Image (cartoon, rainbow, N blue to C red):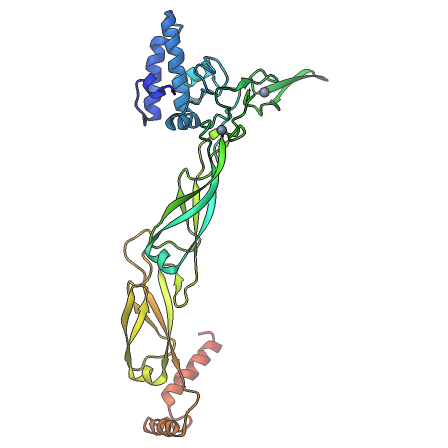
Length: 376
Ligand SMILES: [Zn+2]
Ligand SMILES: [Zn+2]
């Protein structure tokens, strides 16, 4: 049964850091051995201080919130006042003065890394949003030891090399006298603890690899390359440290008809010359189903028609982008005798049968070319 660290401080789960600090200060003022000689108060002070330490260290607090005990390695009472991982007076100083750095062993638990996983989406999925089941393979908290890394019923032992300090000192006699240097203890990697009997499930790492399926909600309007963050779904850290985040990166598959440019969609329609000249109404396929698109008589090749609000939704605003329809007019390439005769008649009727007859049209063409050469 894990200690109710919130209860010890008279708080409920979910208390803010401010609440925890305030509750601890209030209790420590009454219970500190310097002001209260009562042996019971001393014991209570130790309890309160442990609870304070468990709840102000994000890694330890996470273990508490998961129902574990960051100080417990099997049976109750392991660690104890002044034991491994406990900063003693330094923590009290922190509580009263805020942020005095304490030297000493570092925590065995470390934060986990973020993970990145790609997800392939069809165009309509990224435009309208979807829910995707993705399989992720990450480190998760070892449930056999809740991250402690110790075999059931055993606890970590104080490192023999550094006596739990997490660092070793060497004294060298040099030109200027004695030089004392400290370095991280190589036996315990600075944690001050060793695990004599590692948890058989995780080998002492406090985490195991597991494959799980997550349901990811893809918001409407995401674009290729965007990442959806799932907080705390990344890798759990060594010693059961807090998990990093999981990023799901969107990869949009190319669509056979539509090209996407941000919130706008583009497509191309090819019209016979006669249709472009006479006009028509097209049934155009869009992501929302078929829509009627009016082609006005005399539509030119290269013109762009806009179907408003038929693009992708705007991610950070309301409304949708447009569908832009690029018109390409086809000039007939093979004419039979009858068709050629009709076209010649049409040309004659329009006065287009003699070279250079259409001064206006040619003038337009020549002026464009001339402008291009003169940089206008
Ligand atoms: Zn050591
Ligand atoms: Zn384990």
